[in-house]
Length: 136
Length: 80
Image (tube, rainbow over all chains, first blue to last red; front, side):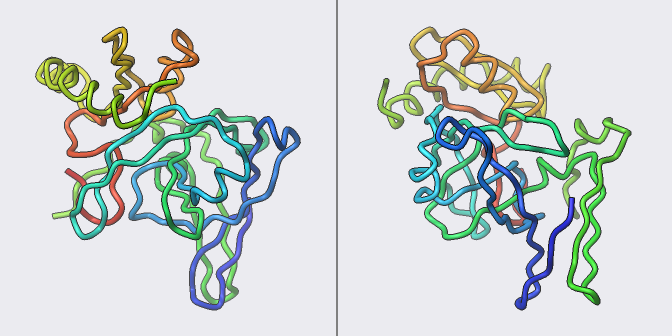
């Protein structure tokens, strides 16, 4: 999968979300956020537009240490040519965030000299169950 | 369908009652709790845990925890 680095230096990967309203998929540009330990965050306004089905809630911790309760919604993702069932998290932001949950067992290369990124599937799926070790 | 807030409130004491055993057996995995039945569903990812719950209860809401973590997801550096 290929993406770009925007004028502000943010790594952006176009992804394809599938849902009952858009069964053939709708493109969403997601920022790669390696500080986010989940899979995918979508703005609540986009979730409302996509008419995703709510599935429940989770607790999250923001970068300042504050706790927040967030809703989860169901969709499917075209992920390396396969449909992947996914629970996305809603927030009040403006931009979709793609977290490390979707990057495990993948190889992410961000080329800041040419303003492009590549995300490659790694055949060693062991990384999917990898534990993210705390930095000391 | 239930209100989301009541689902989270109802799921927390169930999680607390299971917490020690879950941390011993399933550290770092995810557990979705469906509070009407009191049942819990474990997965390696958030999506897997919720999917397991919806397989049995497709129209019910769940609250999902990450076992051994303060929250299911973190935005930023605080990971435990």
